[in-house]
Length: 166
Image (cartoon, rainbow, N blue to C red; front, side):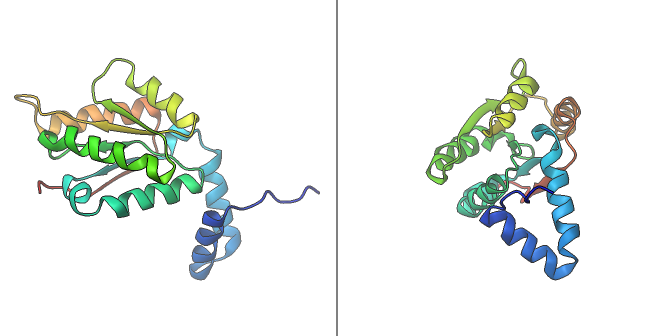
C-alpha cells in the first residue's frame, strides 16, 4: 500500500471545513475528482464589474485559494458590462502576479481561444478573458459566445456573481 499524497495547506483547510459538514472521506473524494478532471473542465468564473471595482482583493484571494488547491478556471469579465470588460481585465491582470499567479489576458472572440485557454490551464496559468462592447451585440449574444467556449472546453461549472454595472 502506498503512502497518501501530501496535502497542501489549502487542501487541508478545505477538507477540514467539508469534514465539519460531512465525512472527510467524502470531501477527499470530491477534491480528488476535481483534480482528476482535465484542468479546462473545472469551471469558468464570471465576476461582474462591481466585484472588480469594489472587491478585487477578495477575488484575487479566492483565485489564489483555488490555485493552491491545484484548480484553475478562466475568469471572464464584461459579460454583463462589456464597456468595462477591458479595464476590468487590465486591473485583474496587473493584480494577479503579486499573489504568485501567472495571468494570461485574452479578448473573447480571438482566434483559437479555446486551445489557448486549454494550454494555459494545463500549465497552471490563469486565463483572464474579457468581452469588449460591440455595437448591436446583446447579452444573449455574449452568453451564446460564452456557451460555445464552455462547450469547446467541456467545462463543468459556470459561476457568475456581482453582475451589474458599477
